Image (cartoon, rainbow, N blue to C red; front, side, top):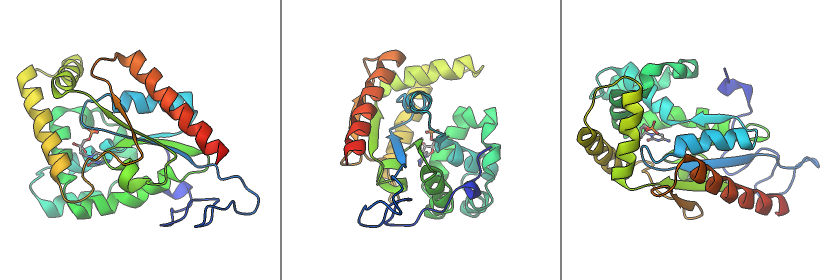
Length: 240
Ligand code: DC
């Protein structure tokens, strides 16, 4: 399991291998090719990000799992103190737990994610992951805006709420959950409102992110489109 301590800490205003002016350091080519994938719940961003990681041979972090783990460990998501303590003590090796994929975990995650101290406690881990040599793929809500605003490739993946609800419903049913499609749609709308409406690091398309609407695309077509966007970004980055 990857540890935050395995990589050099990220320094605000700089990138590993580059000075603040963007010059290469010590003749070493700046190699941190970060792919930032943001978007609302069930937009397909997780599938796209993990396939991009394979295609570009980069390590991948699903940052939603961090918030899910905090939400689940905090137990009562209405307890601010419990959520902050869970975030400060979070062990990233607990992210494999299938319980983090449930509907309840998603709801709890969205609630604790609105607490600024929770976000602050998870910030360095995510930035360190993004800054590892060679680069990384991260997906979430604030990767292109807060975690890695310097990322050379940014995608904002979205789809109509009804389409996202149907996809999430199929996923949950396949996991063995018994749930009505309408309830999943209501969850999605509530989470969209909470994630976009919070004051700290809201769900937002970065000004330099490419919008990818997957409403009418299947998984293959979505991944192909994302791959083309990243290949173009990579070519620009290599020329720069
Ligand atoms: O991507 P997901 O559905 O697993 O995310 C669960 C919740 O975690 C989401 O509703 C909001 C929060 N989250 C966040 O605030 N910032 C991130 N970078 C990732 C997730």
